[in-house]
Each structure stands twice: as structure tokens, then as C-alpha cells.
Length: 166
Image (cartoon, rainbow, N blue to C red; front, side):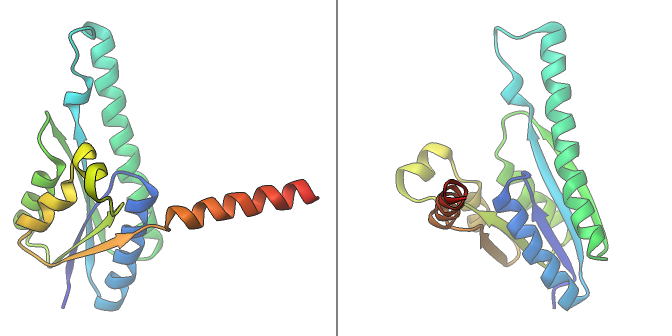
């Protein structure tokens, strides 16, 4: 059913949760995975940053993107699944646009995306590539949430209690 699974990643725990789910699906379906990471170089543009400092920031953004791609690819490789990856460099365009375009060009059968599940003002303030993708994706989308913040906090509290009791 699904032979080509596109997985956007930003290197976050949430994106990695999506990638892990894509790996499970790919194993079951005999599918291949393509990873996409979007580097927005507009972040480095500032009237106060120029010359060598500007170039250094761009180089660091690109290196971080390559690192994200490398880590994600290694995770898929370790699972024995066919994988390739693309790094998209952009100047201020929505990452969702590039993800939807990649799904069309590669003829993906499924998008698997990690999501923070933000609502209300949090989503408006942070922007929503997820909403863009939902509205324009040419293929089905599987949204995967990482562990709930309450669970992460509880683990931290329990660990702190265990350490102080010891």
C-alpha cells in the first residue's frame, strides 16, 4: 500500500517520534523512506550581521541541517530500510511548502510527520507548517505526537525524588 514514505525532520524529539513510526510502517509495507529537512537561511539575515560573520552563520545553519539529515538517515539505515534524504535551503518560505512540493515531485504515498499538537495562540504565534501541509498535501498524512509534556515532567520529578532519597 505505502511504498514511498516522506518524513520531514527538524531533529527534534517530536520529529524523531514521527521517523520511528515511519520506520515501523516501512518495515511492514516494504517501503522506502525519504527524509527532508528545510534550512531557512533567512534566519541569518540581519542588518547587523554581514561579511564573514554572516557567512559563518550560514555555514553553521547548513552544517546543522546536514547533521539532522545524517542522524535521521542513520536511524533508518540501522533498521535496514532503503533511505535517501534531501536538504532544502530556502530564504523565508514556509517549510510546509517545500515538504508538500517534495511529496508531489517524489510521488510519495504517505507523509509521516511529528507534531507538537499546539492549539490556539501557541499555534498562531509559532506558525504552523502542519496546518499548511494538511491543507495542501497531495497524499495521506500520519501525524505522530511525541510523549506528552506531563509525562516528561513526571519522569523528571520522579528521577529527582529518587536521587534525593538515595
